Image (cartoon, rainbow, N blue to C red; front, top):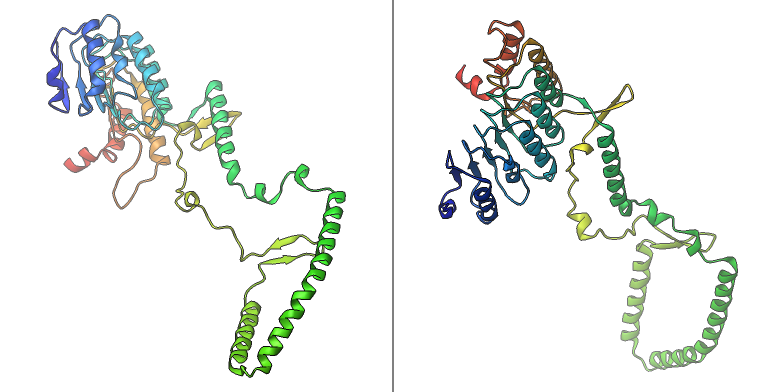
Length: 381
């Protein structure tokens, strides 16, 4: 199978080309070298190994992946969920996944919902024409609103907080103010140091007496020689220096104990890193603000996913209520940016053609709510 033509365009469609596990492995080998390819459509190619999840990785910068009509079951959905969870939290490349016309049931929907708990890159998920019922719909609805963290997630969050605090420790000003006691000199060493300093000062004074006398004789000779102009200039310079010293702030003052105290005006200059430092952004979802309630830790739901398609599944009124409650929660918690008219959270939710009447009151209420959020429907109305 020749794949050299993949280098020609940013998106490729391989619909029903008889893809096998062997040819798919060859395709995965050359794909990282095709940096211009951002969209892949491998539709109508059922692989026995369910190895489509290998497309979802950090070293393959794909943005859109369509895997429609590939007989993907719950096992394949589990592999895809694990691949999504392994993505780097700061990965913003992969934004769209199409799993329509497959064999994903409630179990597979639960796996995908588990990935959406901490995934902050996926913007669109298409699960239409599958076998998802109320249990799967409720699992997807849970991650859209506030959900409790598992014990494993809580432990991971504590590790991340500990690492973050360790990184911020060197920047703490308390470390520079208080040093270790082991580094402070003892009383005996300070007394010896003071004694040696006094002796050195006395010795230096005796040695400095003779040159000062010579300097006095030289200055007296200069004054007697009649160089009054130069003497007056030197006197003015000395006076200027004295006044300048008086005007300058005393940068190092000594307290009664003999320790030098730095004044507020003398501060160490900021380094280039501190000057150019930007406010740190939360790069991991577990570091987002949490809420403690009834002994549990609740994390804000996934507000990055903006499109969820559950068209033509097996969802009844029970699953519909759960989806409606999640959208209402997002409506209350998210803030609308008035200038641009953009709000976070789901902007489009497709639940038509399921096992409830089109006149269902919850469905009509959900439609009205999404009408106020969907930018496309708002423009048509």
